Image (cartoon, rainbow, N blue to C red; front, side, top):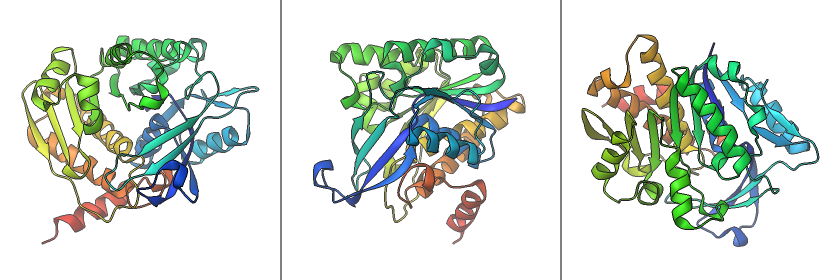
Length: 327
């Protein structure tokens, strides 16, 4: 049995060498593998989960290197797809000191997640403990159908379902209300929902955390998290809400930090599910321990360039937390 399956985009990130410059003004870019669901898969694997990835890349050198990278990381790639005659998506990122990176994407007509419904193997989905996805694989109709089939199978099979919209405005070419509706449909059936502070108002419909969290909880979510960068993370469940402070480190780049946070959260909650605990049964002290650890994983990810190259191992996280707890 695989602990976690991630479905969606896998691409090459090109991150600006300078901080706080526009993409067009960057003197150069550092190449690194990325894509939010792929980041989550590798991050969770480094934290001790068994992981698989469902996605599609082009039949080109970038697709070859990305598939090989996931394999080296121990992520199961048996359900990866190579699209003949297609190009692997690329993302150019202007890195900003406040963590709000700006992206410019290069992709073919199928978008960043060139999946189709026929790529979904029901038995593979049912073999897992959790499924994680984002909204980018819901932009193009074919990829949306694939993602919706996967999450429907996951829900019917009792998997833990996690959703991080990861809203990227430049990728959407629809009226604003249709974008909001399409992203909002992803919340349905997801027990864990993580939305960044920058995306919160657009995706949830209000700036207020308590009001937005209540809407998501009333819609069926069991754990709602707003990641807030250097301010930590706010969370809400049916039994209450709270806030966990961030760790302050000498950050170099923020790409992938939110994905690392999500991966840790899923990994830790899966451990409790194996003990028979549902999210609603998790005590506040344990939930805040999980989110504190997730904040640590996110903080460590900001210490290096690129998303996947920066993701820490469980041993590194343990050492960081021990040091942070010292007087």
